[in-house]
Length: 170
Image 1 (cartoon, rainbow, N blue to C red):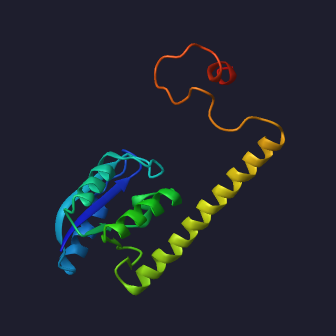
Image 2: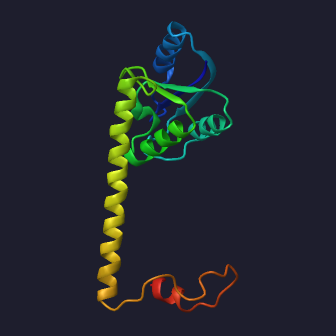
């Protein structure tokens, strides 16, 4: 089975070497063939786009490997919503995610359970956001404010400074 290794450190002062050693050792013990090693060094985990993460996800979409090995889930993403989004895409592509230091593998019953719990939280978060949006729209409507996009917002051409621009450019 081909696998991708994803390594990340937040500052330029840190090194991915310790993660790389542990992940290679894990792959060797579990007979996983390393397809590629993706390293984001000096990049915050709160960013949803990172050069090597984006490259790895593109390779995953092309079917280059069937599993991803990380040291910890927080190497993949610090933002819960982003991590859950990535996990959902991995599930849809039938790609295993293995976090070695947390002993989690999404192909095992415990890993699937963990993923199900995370998915439940993601769904709850989405529903709470929808609820807040609906409440905000209802409040604005009750106040007599217009809802929706300004007239003419569908055209992409040049527009005179008026309407939308004058309302929001202040």
